[in-house]
Structures are given as C-alpha cells and as structure tokens.
Length: 228
Ligand code: CTP
Ligand code: MG
Image (cartoon, rainbow, N blue to C red; front, side):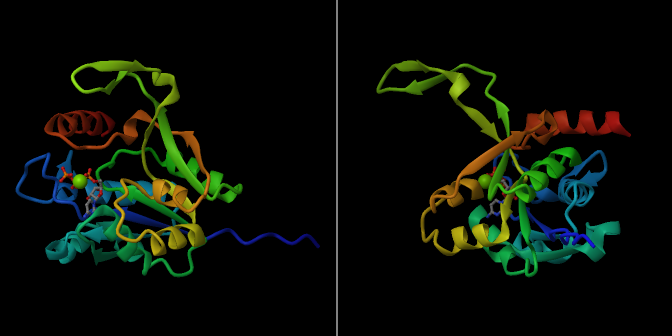
C-alpha cells in the first residue's frame, strides 16, 4: 500500500492596506473597482482560483468591515484584518492568521489581474522544494545607473522585474518576519534573502502588473472589459 503524501495547506495573504497616494483617489486603492469588481476582490479570486484554500486580507484599519463586505461569494474562505503602517507590517499582522499553513503566498491587491496559472506556478515551485519563490519578467527598457550629474548604461539582461504572489515555506516566512527588526523591505523575498534563504524564480505574466498610477487603472479597465 503506497502512502499518499497529504497536500500541503496553502494560505494566501493579500496586502490591501495601502492608501494609494500615487493614484490620488478618495477611497483606498484596493477598493477601487475595475470593470465593476473591486481590486481586492479580484486579487482574492485569483488566489483561490490558483490553488490557495483560504485568504487573509490586510485592509486599511478604518475599512475592515467595508472590505469584508466586498468579498461577496468568497467570504467564507476569507478573513479580513487590519493592516499596518508599512507593507511589511501588514504582512506580519496577517501572518498571525495563517495557522496551519504549510505554504504561504503574499500578494499585492494592487495586482488584481494576475492569472491563476501564475499563482499555481508559484505554489508548485514551493511544493517542489524551493523555500522562497517569486514570479519575474525580463526588463524591457534600457537601464542606466545615476552618477553625480551623468548616467552610465548597465546591462539590462542581468535584471528582472519582480511581481507577486511570492510563495514561501510557511516556517521560512515566519522566521524572516520575526528577525527583520526595524529595517524596511520592499517585498518578502528580500526579507528571506536577509536570513540567507535562496530566492528562486518562475515566469510571471504581463497581467500581473501593479496598478500604481492613473494610467495603470485605464489599462486594467480595458483589459478587464475585454474579458467579460
Ligand atoms: N500595502 C499594505 N499595507 C501598507 C502599504 C501597502 O497592505 N501599509 C499594500 C497595498 O495595499 C498594495 C501593496 O501593498 O496592495 C503594494 O503597495 P503599493 O502599490 O505601494 O500600494 P499603496 O501603498 O496603496 O500605494 P502608494 O504607495 O501610491 O500610496
Ligand atoms: Mg506604497
């Protein structure tokens, strides 16, 4: 009789507690609708469709109830909590609600159109033994390093653009956050790297782009309308 290994439990953290200063709207960025569906709802849907069994959403403190209402049909698999001042604070606070997870994904609500196959790729890579996994895309523009009052070309092929969801062995992500101290990190993979965990990559997808400035919202709207 062969022993079938239990499927690892995958929990996704969707960080949605930012205000969206660069977008410049009244409401928090993650609550903004794209073709009628809020960004945070789309992000949660992508995580569940890609293989997460449940999701913890870090929302702006004054908006937790409102965000819980935005979950609609996914509400029974989503827990909405109050996020923190920095992105990494939001992740750390959400980690307390990931008990029982073997694999933890961390995804930006600001990447609402990420295809579920990217989520699945990240999960598979962690399942296959990589402790920290990031979806990446090649750098398409030329890059230059800033000197004092001039610039110097660099080889763009040595750079990658990093997306989310990033996937981690749960124990690794918990340890990274427990030892990060006051240092600021732009993402969780960098935090894992700081405790000497190797960060590996899987191919990302253009649809995983981050909505940061008003033009990004226009693009997302056009794409999402084309789908329906
Ligand atoms: N985020 C978070 N908690 C914070 C800051 C950011 O959960 N304290 C989340 C955002 O909601 C977003 C993701 O981290 O989904 C990526 O951040 P970013 O794109 O910078 O979003 P905002 O911080 O909201 O935007 P801005 O920097 O323009 O204010
Ligand atoms: Mg920000």
